[in-house]
Image (cartoon, rainbow, N blue to C red; front, side, top):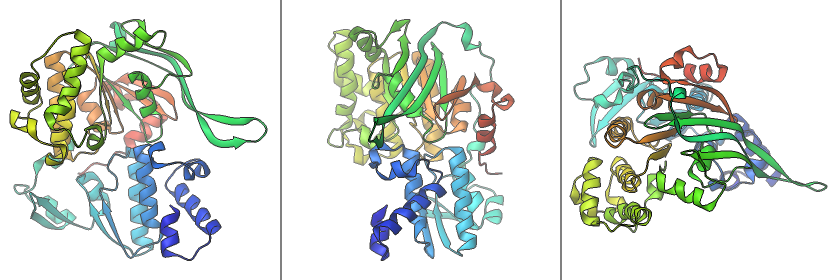
Length: 422
C-alpha cells in the first residue's frame, strides 16, 4: 500500500502507515496492523480486492475507473463497497467509469449505461430509459434474477440419510504475526467447533463473507490442512487418523478452484491438463486408460468438442477454461467434488452455463458436491442445504427451501444485502 503514497505524495513513513490503516478500516478489514505485514497470497480473495479498491480511492482521484470491482466479493461487502463508491461520487464529485457484468451492482451506482456484446455497443442511454426498452439486442443472460431454482421440488431432509462425509468439532488456528516478547507467539482462531454432514448425492452450500473461514474449512475437507482438533470422516473412516485415511480421501474427492488461470498450467495443452486427472485415476484404480479417447469423452461431457484438446489455456475463454478444470476433476471419477468459489470470477452468462453443467453432471454421474461461495443466488439454484459461516462459526444450517424463514441475524443480513435488478 505504501507504494501508491510514496509515488504520489511527499508523506513520511509514519503518515503513510497511518493513512494505510485508515483505508483498511474504511474497507471493513479487521486487525489492520497485522494485515499490513502480510503478503497478498496470505489474504483471502475478497480481502485482497477490498484493499485494492481502497488503494484506488486513497488519493481521491477526479476520475475513477472501476473494472469489475465487486467480482468475487460477498453480498454484504459488495453492498458496503457500492455504498462507498456512491459516497465518493457525491461528496468528492468524482466521475466514475464502472465496468461490470453485474446488473444489480450497476443499477445501484450508474446514472447512464452502455451495453456491449461481442465488441459492439448494442444499447446506451440513461439507466432507467435504456433498460426499460425491449431487450432484443441485449444479452438476456444478464438477468440472473429469473434463474430457476433446482431445489424447488421436495427432497428428503438430509439429516435422515447416511452421510458420505462428516466434519466433527473442527477447530483451526494459525500463528499470529504478533510477537509477544514474554510469551512467544500467539495464535488466531479461524474455525470454532465446526461440524457438518454431507449425504451422498446432495449438494451442500457453504456461504459466508470474505474472511469468514470458508476456504480454511475447504482446505480441511480436502485434506490439505490438518485441524488443531476435531475429526474428518469419509464413509465413516477417519481421514487424519492414518496415512491410509488420507489416501482414501484423495481417491474419493476432487477440487475445482476459484482461479482457473493459476490452477491450469499455462504450458500444458488441454489434453495434458485433463491427463493429470486421468493419471490419478490410473494410480487409484491400477488400470491403463486410452487417454486420447478419455480426453475426448470428458471434453464432450463438459460441453467442449475434441478440437479443444490441443489448445493452451490462454487460447480459451474463462468459462471454457473452467470447464476444462471441471473435466480434470471428473477424470478422477471422484464421489465428491469441492468447488471453492468456482464461478465467482465468471460473468453472469457463463455462471448460469456452468451451474447448468454442474447440475447435469451431478444427476448423470451421481456426484456429491460441496459448494463454497458468497453468492446466495447460485446456492439457491444448485444446493440442497446451506451452511452459513460467520467469523469461523456456523450460525445456521438449513435446507435451501427454508432460507427465507431463517431466524439467524447474520443470514438475515446477508439476504438483505443482495442487490437485484428490478
